[in-house]
Amino acid sequence: MHISVVGLSHRTAPVEIRERLSIPEQTMETSLQSLRGNEQVLEASILSTCNRLEIYTLVRNPDLGVSAVSDFLSSHSGLETGELTPHLFSYHHEDAVDHLMRVAAGLDSLVLGEGQILSQVKKMMRLGQEHKSLGPILNRLLTQAVTTGKRVRSETNLGTGAVSISSAAVELAQLKLGQSRGLDQLVTLESEQIAVVGAGRMSRLLLQHLQAKGASGVVLLNRTVERAEQLSADFPDLPVQCRPLSDLDQYLSTCSLMFTSTAADEPIIDAARLAPLNRRSKLRLIDIGVPRNIAADAADMDGVESHDVDDLQEVVARNQEARQAMAREAEQLLQQEAQQFLEWWDSLEAVPTINQLRSSMESIRTEELQKALSRMGPDFSARERKVVEALSKGIINKILHTPVTQLRAPQTRQDRQQALRIVERLFDLDPS
Image (cartoon, rainbow, N blue to C red; front, side, top):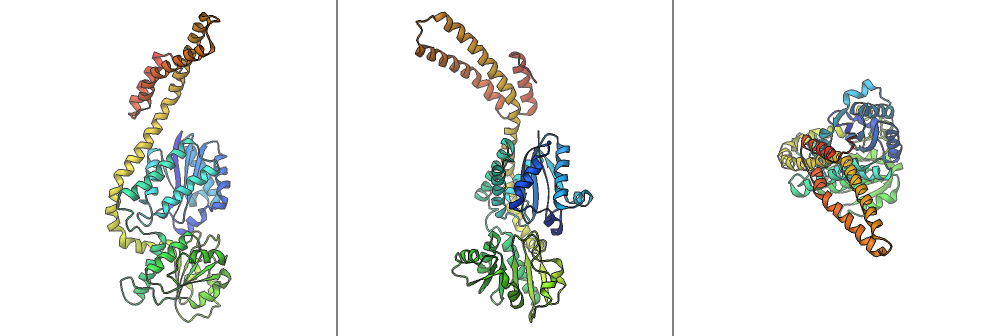
């Protein structure tokens, strides 16, 4: 068995490719079942975010397993293998484990150290458990990854002042506003007419950072106004108007800055929608949804400036150098967590031999106990029989404790295999 990860991210694929491979939660069960339907895939879990799609699997054969996952991705996205392959990465065993630990810690994120990825890894584990695509190996691996992410945030400085995709989007708006005024610096958003489309987690973070950056008010548009009102209630110090999504054209006409973050599968704003609007001022659109909420042709409209998640690199680059130093604090911790999982994985090699040894000892115990009890005769009470049986089990457990502990203990693969062969010869066990 082998652990593998196949996927793509902001590092390997542009947003127009990433959005083709996005897997929403409502189709996650079908996708996991499709993966598990391949005989090569023993366990599977999917991490789908705006900046990455990664499929973690336990497979019988690494090459055949990666091929099976690649075929699934090609079928899901509608992209030919030749179009898709240049954007994919794949890691095996130790490298796959290391990669997941880095992802959970925020070291592989567009915004280095961002905290939201940890909740997304937790969600990946939860969905895998709910849809029964996880087994003991990936369940243990994902649990270790969540532990790693928590430790990095509590034991290092990487999580201190960490920014999210949402905060980077707000900072991008400040930067572009400053550049339009001939300034190479961030400026306040106090004078901007701002709208946020969507009322999910990303929009919550948008409101949080807009408030911190001086926004004087926000229009929050959502398909259900009730959900928008629930979200706005958490920001009593920020004036928020809640409006239905059907009012979108009105605010495209009047706002100077609009952020979009919805779960829509297709763009909700495009050139055809913008063309008939009677705009009198510049409109900046910032889309942090994947799939994109704003079509590429929106940027072709006069007076419209459009940005997507890939444009956040400009903001990220400004902060990256300082955060790299913080990231180095986490590296040693990640190595410890990865090594702990790999030692557990290696210890599984001893399980068949340990089971055979226990079975052999149990057979001997049962046989010798029956001989002894048969010589005791009818005067031997049921209570006394139980005491003798418990005694025999206790002796066997005491004898087995040290060798079993040693076989499971952390050690090199070569040393473990040598110890297993010795035990198999000494007790005449079947090595198969």
